[in-house]
Length: 393
Ligand SMILES: Cc1ncc(COP(=O)(O)O)c(C=O)c1O
Image (cartoon, rainbow, N blue to C red; front, side):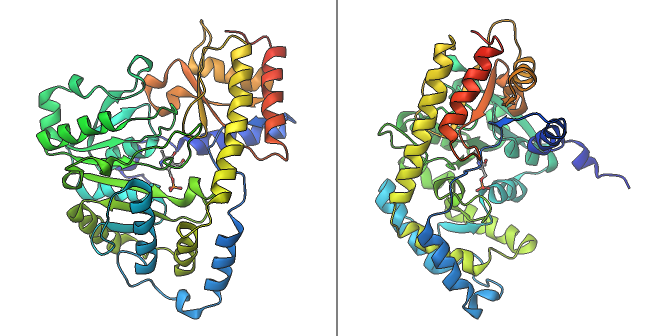
């Protein structure tokens, strides 16, 4: 069997490679502290689980979802929350599409718009889905470096006019995976102006909009005046409510883009199990205390890890958003060599920054989500193991 040329343009999914490495090391008896994949370890809040149980008992939920855009009650619940949270009004009939998680929607947006040879502006480093679906669709990613000196924001003025004119889509993601950086409304205004000037559709991945700390509140790109002309924003229940396995998310924003995405989806999937969509209503209608508790738990873990690294001399600051820490590697190391050293000498699994693009060089990413009865103690142990292994900055 011969893979399509399209598929052979992209590598094996990053986390599939890492899962294989983990399996091997565990077989060798290594006790791994796994700071690899970002996958919430705390349970989905109880009221959401109860809502699912009830919905699953209703045979109406066992059928195809024929709504096209997703359950209307769920769309209404999300739009109401969105207005309270961001002060932005979405029309549940026009500005929102339910997704099988945001990964699905991000990929399908590319398939909706990208023709062979089209330019797509992709941050580097970034969640690999933007780049790899662009390649699958025959598009040409143009990488926008996310550099520490620019606070991990792309420099739009550095994009050559010729490239900007050819670009069809621009991907952004704040709070950002993997750098944990955040963006403010001034930057978002610049983005909307740029998108208007060059007639580019902006896809803002807001997966971590609710994963924030120390009083920081992440804005929506749709808060900017004129954003509805040029923006689709992606939201998900995965990180906010510890629901990665449930697969539920939303695309919101520009009416035509929502319609086009919906048309594509109607040919390739049949929506999300209706019982899960009903449980999603319970999520957005509250209570929100469990979300606050989860964020407080991540905040404590962040402090343990970052303060521990700082004691070892690492020039890393406490991030305001996401459950990642973007750790600069010590002098003389590369992302790969340092990640391997941490794994082999300390049994601590991190992801080399280069897994997210070449400008991830010089960093490794540590996730604060880890399956352990006492994650804070485990993170403390990770730092102690690094110290014992002679890791210093
Ligand atoms: C930046 C970013 N976007 C999207 C996703 C995917 O989320 P979902 O579970 O909604 O597909 C992830 C998951 O790790 C992510 O890090």
